[in-house]
Image (cartoon, rainbow, N blue to C red; front, top):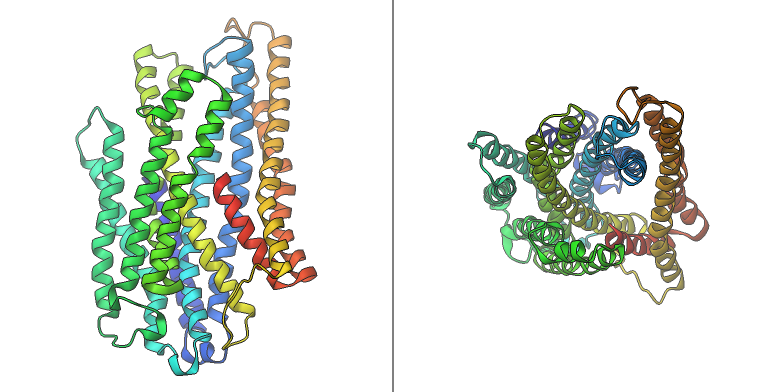
Length: 499
């Protein structure tokens, strides 16, 4: 819960500071700076979001390489070759494995979801300003309505943070039970429900006095943005439920994988699991657009992430219980303790998959709205927005963009394999050269294994990171903004499936 509340709290604190310093302190939020076509305040917001994105990429990618290299190195030699239990202190890679849970599954996850959260809120605000600047003269958005649209995502996210505190309090204050999975689910659902109720009150207070919604595509009056945001909340819970179905040991897909015990069966289940969440995302996108225009899609992303503190808390539960099991094994506690931590670890793996469903679903909606605001950025005022796939530049961009996440993922998998290979060689070397390790008479050299993971992560993440930053920039300068528009669409579509 500390991790979850930090993610929501720091993200909102940063946004409030951007509003205070750049919006009010430097006066960029005033009417003049918007009417003259200066996107100064939205540029400040995008730069804040971009900073979060870059750090999240390094933490997620670097942390992922670190934790998986350590995990594979520890398991391949320890469990498979030396036939010693997982997290056995005789295994030199076991400390690196436990540290990796913190680096990859806590720090990486936290920065990833903080970035998605900031990106979703920023995209809604940027889109509101873009829509205002490109509105026709006869249907211009009144400035007071625009200002409310700029505040609304921030207000809704703040309500989500309060709802998360209440949802987390339920688990903390409740007496212990023998079903931690159910308690964690109730925490998430109650946070979601409170967010929807509180969001309605905020919408009523902000938009009730507005009479004309024609310019901003609020097709069901003042509650339109609330409906879109609530759709995001509900679809987030549904996607989480689908993730739970495909990953929990209580249901058929995981049981079939256990029965088959093959990578093929696991891969098949993974590929099939893409369909239902994408249908939910498609429906959410369509309905939120029908209700509240492009601003509605951005608000659906904000809604899905509004109670991010609750979902991160539930997600971080996994690596903590995994580490607890590691400590129990290393301290040679009685088997009953390990039985408890294994059950908690299993629950944690399922809740982690639910958290990732939220992260991916909301990131895809935020990416869509950011993509539209990017297209508005180079479109002359008064022209209609159109991405025509008969344009060969857009089609070529989409094809290249679709391949980009595969290139990125392939490089990362290769990076993990390289780092894991070095880890395996080091563990084998220690077993061979330090007498008495397997008998428990000599202490392994844990430090070298930690260094291999750290250096492997830092070295191997350079190229994927450079590609993700440089590729759109070079493509833009060489082929222009329409190619980049296609690139973003293709990359978003294939990245959602892979993720």
